Length: 98
Image (tube, rainbow, N blue to C red):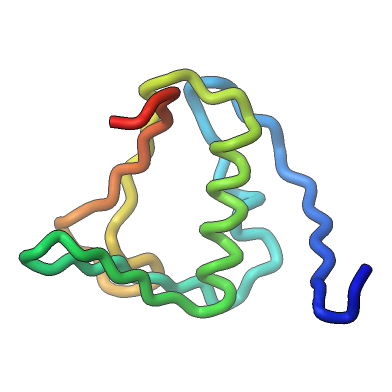
């Protein structure tokens, strides 16, 4: 491994095609916080702690590798670890670009 590389070793549960267990996406992380914001032009910003990015990375790896059915989706608040809000982020698995 080159000196400017990082190694990653991770084991996640293989969830069912229409469900997901989030316990392992946050396991061992202590400061999970992220927030998505969008402006009137449709630009999206993501702010996160390093644990927040780790949590999201684990989540997306599970989506990519756990054999999800097309249309599987999950709803999340736009801010994790902050005060609850009504707006939400919906993440949907599909097999083609929309």
